[in-house]
Image (tube, rainbow, N blue to C red; front, side, top):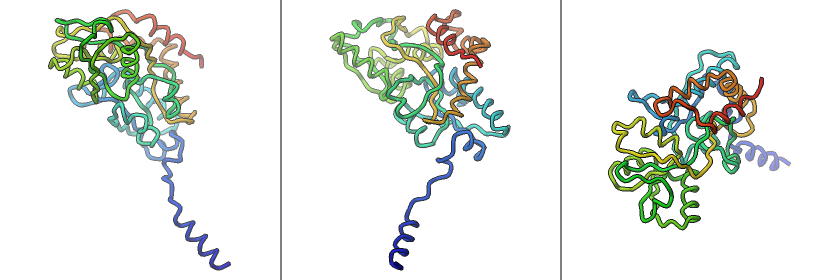
Length: 286
């Protein structure tokens, strides 16, 4: 009996102690630590990127900043600090799953397979996969990619859509996989590829933030449906509800139009029908 007790005690003390923060719901964790961590992509304009001062800015960042304000009110704690954590296409979802960030802000497509890893808020934007090329050699369709080199970021739905579409249309093109939008854009500028493939809104952002926008051409055609949303940890309904309340209020009140014009006004004064429909459909009543 004495030997059994000793063995049981030894087993007890070898069980690893779980990090308390990892067990807490997000709102409780934020209240306890006094900190909320926002994951963002550093080179996905106009959704999320660094400005000239190195500060995170963008359409999605503006949405997340409003969610932070709502979180402070919800937990009755005004001195919550915000940590902006850079993530990339490959680690963004594991960063949420492993409790390294609380909210993912950027150009993130909501899919069913990704919902096995994280939960998503209501839609924040709608776009589609498109192509950027040099204006002197414009590329407007998949057929134009024959015998061409095209860059695309790894770990994205864009790569999946591009490779599937090339196969379906029997288009013989060389796909160059890169680590970031900045790398793909630079390769296009340096004539190392003939086109860069990404979500059309990201391509527009790269165009608007370029020092030489007249050099580039963004195709008006899209060949996928990319519904954007913010990502949070799975099964954390209270935190997700705070975020959804903020988004719904922005859509109902029309304040989202000011945010849209802030980031897209230079490109177009009119909101595309698909995006306007997304705003209306996600304007859920309180």
